[in-house]
Image 1 (cartoon, rainbow, N blue to C red):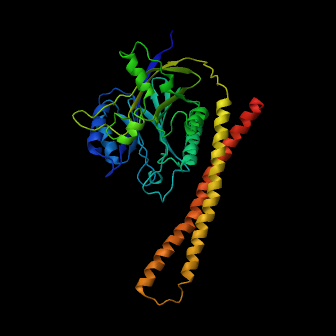
Image 2: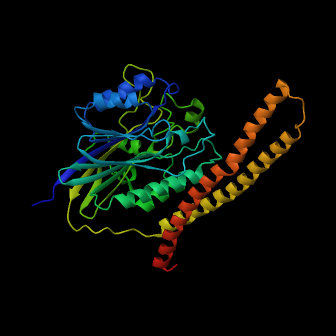
Image 3: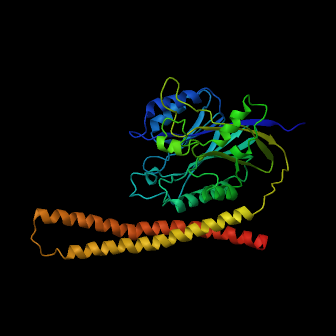
Amino acid sequence: MADEKILVNVFTLNCWGIPFISKNRKERMEAISTYLSKGVHDIVCLQEVWDESDYFLMRDTAKNVLPYSHYFYSGVCGSGLCILSRWPIEEVFFHAWPLNGYIHMIHHGDWFGGKGVGYCRVKYKDLNIHVYSAHLHAEYSTEDIYLAHRVLQAFNTAEFIKMTSSCADLVILAGDLNTQPTDLAFRLMCETGRLKDSCLEYKPGSNLDDEKKARGSVVLGTNERACNSYTDPVESKRNPDGKRIDYVLYHTGPNSIAHVDRYDLPLLGNVPSCQFSYSDHEAVSTQLLVTKAKNQNFIRKSDEGYISALNEAISVCHDAMTTLRYSARKYLIYAMSLFLLLLSTVGMAERTYVDLPRLLLVAVMFYFLIMGTVWNRIEWNGVLSGEKAMEIIYNNLIKKNKI
């Protein structure tokens, strides 16, 4: 009897749902909910659903075709992650990352989101599907002060997938990974988690009416595209194709094989009857054709790329720890300087115009003291933990390959 073939259609979108900040949020969330209710997709992974009411809207609107769902609560304002499924969700878990930006960078907000990777185990017939959704820390500027955080988030996510997917027939990681295909964080994640990029694995064929258009969808980006209404006009002229930072990654277990049957960006263009896009990101849809087949031995490709990525990531950790040493000294010097300044005011007449600056100096001094001690130590331990874990894998690969 021939092995059964199962189609699994996966959808992911960063919904850009920040209350009071994201433009046209209400109208866009309603449009996304209406689209999901059409029942095109089997598994839906959404990011930046920061308002719980938006999740309820999507869940209730699409419940006839996606009756199973879960929202991952975390941090101050939620993780922003939720998963909807056509098939039963049997287990869920949320793994928070030890490093996720800085509390004092309020305008970035990543720390307050309590970000991490959300996991759902989905069952369809005899297919055991492990679905993971994540939203890595954004870059924000060319200086990229969050590089070490994002690299360690990528490694931590891939290690979490490895540790929890031994019984999976199909592993799916979908989300806004805030890293491009050539970046270290992406390479490290794919090598560590043995993940394949559905975009690169897709080979357009006769199942699509317009093969040329399909190939174009593979090449073009998912963020800051010129055709997106929310893209900065200056950026759209500089790079009209945008950046590809949203993904559906996958790998199969020992008893199954899969290939990408379809890859598409299904929500290009504006919301119907509106002058704005569904989000500032483009949605990604991937259809996997999965075959249950016993005794499929996994053959790992050369370890050379993995060794190189690990070595580069360890160097990033070294650089981050050097920066942390400097930052600790800098903040403590600032704190000591303010303390001496406060001492110099002792004995001054107790007047309101003197007391207010003192209170301000005390607040700033304690801020510098916390940043140079407690917060610095938390980040130091987070970086050190990731570095040591990578060193173990790196040294074992070196021994294995006798380099």
